[in-house]
Amino acid sequence: MNPPKDPFGLAALHEAGSDSPLAELRAITDPAYIDTLNHGDLQDWLAVIESLPDLRPTHIELKNGVSAGLAGVTAEQIETLETQLRKFIPWRKGPFDLFGVSLDTEWDSGMKWERLVPHLDPLAGKRVLDVGCGNGYHCWRALGEGADLVIGLEPYLLYVMQFLAVRKYLAGLPCHLLPLRLEHYPGPFRFYDTVLSMGVIYHVRSPIDHLLLLKNCVKPGGQVVLETLVVEGEEGYSLTPASRYARMSNVWFIPSVPTLQRWMLRCGFTDVRLVDLTTTSEAEQRSTSWMPFQSLADGLDRSDSSRTVEGLPAPRRAIMVGRVAP
Image 1 (tube, one colour):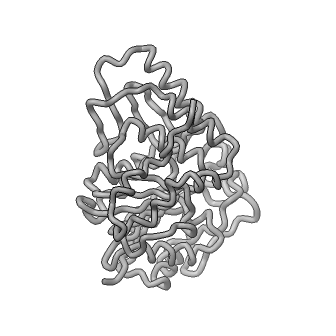
Image 2 (cartoon, one colour; image 1 turned 135 degrees about the vertical axis):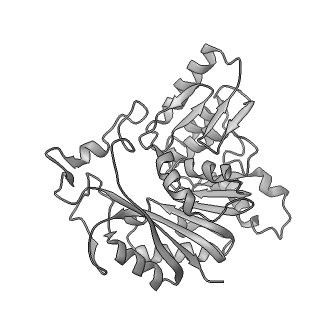
């Protein structure tokens, strides 16, 4: 079976005029670009998406979760759908419900969204960029809040495939995911009303550069949301793990809240404030049949859950919001 000609679902961008601020994104639909994506499973993954059951939902829910429903779906169709979706394990962000297939993901990402949404600028009619969006769960939730356009950036191709699988049943909605890192994003800049960076900054080697790149995407007067691991400490303190943090090897800087606030202010954000501080629990992050590998419990000291297996403070997550001056 041949993979789809427009796997990232951006053909509609070609209908916009050449002066469209999204015109720069058209290159992502070019087959020559797809050929540059370096993953041996890519074509097989795209073929799986193409072979998913052809179901057209009569009900879509994005406000209180992410689901698509249709009366009269057969048990055989549900079984086929689940079998195909499981080819994209591990599913980390969610949950999703597609025609009765319940994707019980590692993270209950709805818990984070509910903590965040009261502090967001109203998204109705707005443009949203979600950086490091994983499989796009929060992109769909932003659309559920009325956003006119949501663009996600995610370089890890398996998560991109998960997004495309879900998008097959949410087709035609103004939500797109680009297989890019923020530093490779081609524009448009100063374009988005709200920019989300959730669970990203502790994975980058230069958090200041990350913040400046985020700022460059936000319209004057727009909002940036930064969600990250934090530790206790005074302004100026940031934890750099010797090797791993809660068994994760790609963690570079975990700041204190005052340090994170100073970073954002130093980068030119205004109205910077902490809106949530939560210790991660196993109700929010755990292994499931859709993510059957190590999770939070495996990264904590079994005799002292306030410490990681490396003897470091257990994960706490902060949400900071800031604004770009008009």
